[in-house]
Structures are given as structure tokens and as C-alpha cells.
Length: 583
Image (tube, rainbow, N blue to C red):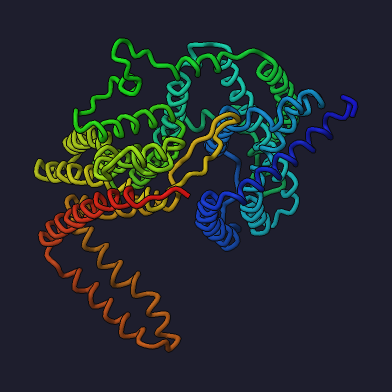
């Protein structure tokens, strides 16, 4: 096909790449289940928002679009740029069958194909929610002329953010490919970029104030709001809307040319990544000739029996050499931290008050999850050798628990005590939180392997064009989070807010648990009325329990349950290791 048909070729490539994404998603049941859960929760929020807009949208007072509104949209645009850059730099910086495609179609068509595929993926996630919310707004305000401008604004928001994100992602990949110091420390640079952006994003969202937000409203990409409100009761700036319409199209076209230039440099140029990876895979063992010990250094692992010590060393090496795998575990903690900031902004409590109960549960959770949540899958090709070389499953259980215990226990206890002392809590409450961390961390490092061996995952997922990792299974992550998080949260809540804990338990048992039985009772189903009445009585009795009883019972009982689960988990790891067979 001639080079003049690159536009049609690029869109065809984008559609094919999108189809491949859909097929891969259908074959990944765990990821599909996770997306399904998120889709249900997000869908309920969208439906609720749609109903609210239809019901009360006509009551929104008309007026001029302020810079605060523009700035709020600008913050979300920056977030979209970050997501696009992250995806371009890690997963979608090259095309399948790269050598064949680059020799048969113009590079510009490949660049357009990558961009259009990302656009199709984004529309697959957000087209329906945006259509529902936008359509509800158009209907409730009686503004049919607004619809085409709203569609144009959404498409330009997506296209401009996607293009600049792709430019940044390809530029990051090019730096890694060209400069040895960047390639040798790319994990550190990636983590630093994420920390800087997430910190800035959270700061703009929660601490920037209207002054900073209004300042962002002067940036051109925030003018998409002015384009979106044309034909509505709200008055934007027509010059800004025109500038966004023309400039957004020019921005997208120019960004495609930049992506093409970066793609040529990346796809046809030399790279130092292979040489760096080969060097990092070699360990200078010196006279000791112990590659595993050299790979672990300088992590301090206590000297124990040789088999268990080797398992512990290998767990550390696996975690160290697969930083992408840790993103699957750190992301929930980051999201929880962002949610904590949002909760604090509502006035429920200060950051310093909410941080200790988060730390006392999250850090033990990480201590167990990082090293032992998928032990069989982490073994990879070495699994047969591990199964046949270890005579005792007890050594395997001790070896899996040792890294999390050695590295996680002091960090969890010290961080819990430090944040507790910085918060508005008495010394006794801080000491009780420290004991929770002291109990949860040893329990986590044995519960995680037990659940990881019960629900192992061996199939890798691709996090880059040349990189595959084996994350823990979704079942193991969910069960581990519930097993450790529920008792830990109850113990921390009973320690710091016993009255609130009592009220929540009373509401949960007496109202929420009784609600479905009350519904069934209205349908005349069996003994549902008696069960609903009994649950209501139990909820009332919980509300009458003295506060001090709630504090100590809510503190001691969950920790006792965790200790019993830990004892069971240690035995379960030993038994499963002895009884595991290779298919």
C-alpha cells in the first residue's frame, strides 16, 4: 500500500491492536473478574450520578464558568497524561510483530496505530459512563445544542492528554535505551516519578486550595470546559473554546509527528538495555563464590538452618529483581492512602489521627505480601528443584517468613509508634497499636504463603513488550487482605475509638445484616422475620455494652484470632509443601 494511505493503515492497526487486547482480556479470568468488580462498583456510582443529574440538574444555577472549574478539569487532564505516559513507557511503546510491521508500513502508520489503539481502549472504559452522565445533563438542562460540543470536548480532552502522555512515555523509553545510568537505575527513576506525581496530584486535589486551582484554569488545556458548555445555560469564553477546538486538533496532529520521530529513534536505534540487563544478571561473588548471598547483600538475614536460609535469600532476590511485581501490591496501599486524605478533608479526622491505624495494618500486610503471597509461582522454573531438594516443609515455611519478619517487623512497629506519637493519642493507645503491629507482622508472613499456596498463580502477565511477571492470584490477594485486614482494623478501631466501633457494630448487625431478612419477611419467606428480629435485638445489645468492654474485647479477641490463624497457616504451608505434586 502506498505511503499516502498511512492514515487508513494506522486506524486499521489500532483496531487490530484493540481486538488483541480484548482477546487477551477474555483469556485472563483473574483480570476479567477484577475489572468486573470495579465495573459494577463504578457503574453503580455512574447510575447514581445519572439519576441525581436527571432529578436535580435543572436546579443548578446558570452562570459563567469560573477558573476554579477549569482548573479542576486541568487536574484531571494531568492525571490522564500521567496514565498515558505510564502505559506508553511500560506496556504500549511498541507494536506486536514489530520488525515485520516497521518493514511493511510507514512508521507514521505504526505511531497512529498505537495512539488509536489507546484511544479505543480508553473509549471502551469511559464512553458509556460519559454518555450517561453527559446525556443526563443535556436532558435535565434542556440543551440539545450542547451535545455535539460536549462530544468534541470529551474527544479533545482524551486525544490531547493521550498524545502528550505518549510523547513523555516514549521519551522515557528513549532515555533508558540510550543512557546507561538511566537504564541501570530505571526502577528508581520510575518510582521517583510516581511518587512525585502522586504527591503533586494529591496535593493539588486536597491542599492546593481554590487559588492554585484557579491558576491552573489559565492553562490552555483547561479551556475544554468552555467548548463543552456551548449551547448550555452556562456561559464560557467563546475565544477560549475556539482556541481549544483549533489548538486541540493542531496539538494532536503535531503530537503524532513527535511520536513518529521518537518512535524512529527508539525502534531503529541502538539500546544499552540488553547489556545492562546482562551485567546486572552477573554477580561478582569474589572468593566466597556464593552468588545467592552476593545477590541478597546488604539485606541482613539472620543465620539459621541452611535450607531455610536459602529459601529466604531467594525470596529477597525475587522481590528485588521484579520491582514491577511490587506495583500490584503497592497500588492498593497508595489508593488507600489517597482515600485517607480525602476522608480527612471531609472533617472526619486529621491526617495525623487517621495515619496510625492505616500504618498498623498496611505495613504488616506489605511485609507478608511482598515475599510470600505467591511462593509457588515465584519459584518459576526452579520449583521442581525446590520441591525435591528440601526434605522438610517446615524449612520452606520458615524461609518464606524470614524476609518479611526481618525487614517488616521493625519497620511496622517503629512506624506505628512514630505516627501514633505524632497523632493525638495517649501513650497507652500508642503502646497498644505497637502490640498490634507486633502481632500482625509475624502472622502476615505465615498467612500470606498459606493462602498463596492454596491459590497459586503460574501464568505471567505482560507489563512491557519484553517483560513478563507472575503476580499473586486475585483470590489470594482478596482472602489475605480480609484475613489480616478485618481483625487488624477492628483491633485498631476498638483501641482508638471504642464508642464509634460499638456504634458501627451495632448498626452492622442490627440494621445491615437484618435488612435482607426483613425484605424476605415482607415476602413471607420462612423464619426470616424471626431472624431479622433476633439480629435487631443483638444490635441493640451491642449498643448497650460498656465502652471499656468494647475496647478490651475488640482489642484482645481479634488478635487472638490472628494468632490462631497464624498457627494454622504455618502448619498449612508445611503440609502443602510436602503434598504438592507437579502436573
